[in-house]
Length: 138
Ligand code: HEC
Image: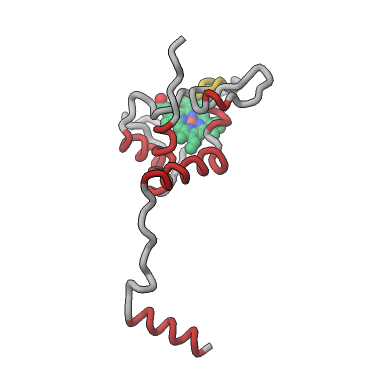
């Protein structure tokens, strides 16, 4: 108990020593975090990756654009994201992931969810998606 009180007191005395934030992720660590978010948490590929005849995701064409079952008020194409969509700058893509609003002020139709990622997660997702090869023109 005394130890806890002392620790709290020294925190108050040396502000910053306790409240220090970890440094922001960068480089390979940022991309790795984006890979984890995209492929294990948010699953953008469920919609944005094309499927094989078996309906399994075609991982060799990750995020190169998918076709979705039609539904009322629903978009049936999830466009290519790999390499970041051509009409987005990196900063615009990061802003989109934090707001759900496109650079032109519009919002994608459902089933695209309006994500509100925090800035670091948005940067990680963008950094990872930027590494994926775009579809080769047929
Ligand atoms: C449940 C299916 C689904 C998931 C999951 C999903 N999307 Fe989408 N997304 C769509 C659809 C469908 C559209 C097209 C909407 C339209 O045409 O208005 C879209 C549109 C977008 C757009 C707009 C593209 C443009 O041309 O302006 C971006 C960017 C995007 N998605 C990024 C992502 C990212 C990044 C993730 C994962 C973090 C993700 N999406 C997850 C279905 C999905």
